[in-house]
Image (cartoon, rainbow, N blue to C red; front, side, top):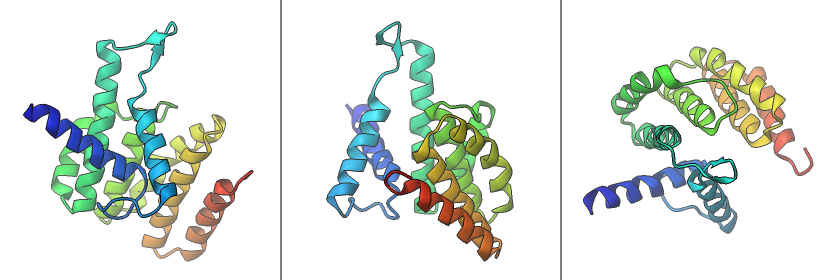
Amino acid sequence: ETGWRRWLGLACAAGLLMTGSTSAAAPASYSDLVGLFEQWRAFERPALRDGAPDYTAATLARKHEELRAYQARLWIRQGRLDAAARWSQEAASSLCCGPSQWCQVGTTTLARLYLAQGKPEQVFSLLEPLLQTACEGQRIRNQVEILALQALAWAALGHRQAARAALRQALELAEPGG
């Protein structure tokens, strides 16, 4: 029972982080709740293999890693950078720049950690291949998230024009029909 409750608590916290909320408080608006619901449903939806849910050990291991990345995001928001850094060391070998959800979540979580650690210069080399993959796959939501993180990195480095350009590009993509 304790393990189940811990997992549920972690899953709820991960859901809050997926909305992009800046605090651990509940989402403030109906659209935030709808976004949370959609992102959680996407996370919990099993991968399909030959038309049937894939509950193989490899697939469940990837889901577990994705959930741990959300846990690291929670630690970053709580200021527990030591715990998030331990996660990054453990996850380093499995991070990638492919189209999978794990690659997106893991890599953007690492970028958030670099920003929180005051290492914005490391964000660009990490996110550029991921942005290219997201553009090729026309994954707008992923592109917006990556561009927003790049804008934060540019701002942290004092390059306001570059930060504004990245943010402008993210906003254009996020517009309806953008």
